Length: 258
Image 1 (cartoon, helix red, strand yellow):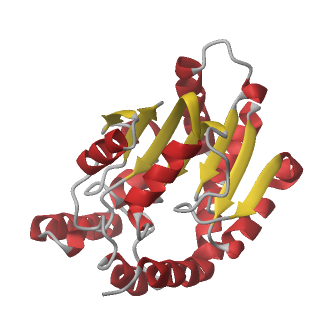
Image 2 (cartoon, rainbow, N blue to C red):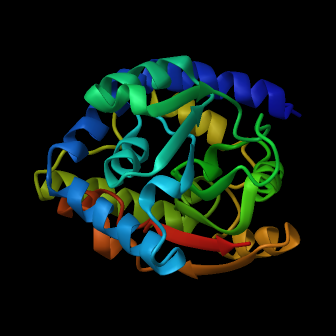
């Protein structure tokens, strides 16, 4: 059995290689209408949870920032942003993507499952496409709950990305997505970039074979948080290309409150 530490090491190696290509996807998002869709969504979530609170007083942790997409948006909104990632290559890309905002965002190399912050350090914690990839997601949620301040909010955007490795019906749906991508003439985001390596890692990650977001609700409740889900959130922010590529794995949102 592979240990969480070994999986973390494999993950770091994989995402080091993926950093330039993944960063290019983020740069495209930052240069299209996707940027405004996501910014509007984040502004709405913040306004509902923190009505009347100045953005600069909202302490944000972007956990698993990758190439910095959320960090950039939340800094532009005016929040005080800390962004962490396990992979130095991703943090380097995030700094480049932040541009003139680079010095206003605190970028730190850190394990999402072992945060080096005091309890209650952040009012808002966000993550996108991270939890599925963690060797110990239960420990991660425990850590995120620990550093979330009273009255704070956690926003987790994720999907059942590799369920097709464990479920035959999901496999057929995944393969239909690949065919639809070709037929509709859009780039297939599940081809190339050593996806076979990621599949090998995903087979050994604990959440790949677990149906979510039901698991998330149970785990966050165990951490003392009140949680709810929005399984239609993808309709608000995904591009048409994403909807074609990933129709079998729609993105969900888990909101949790302290």
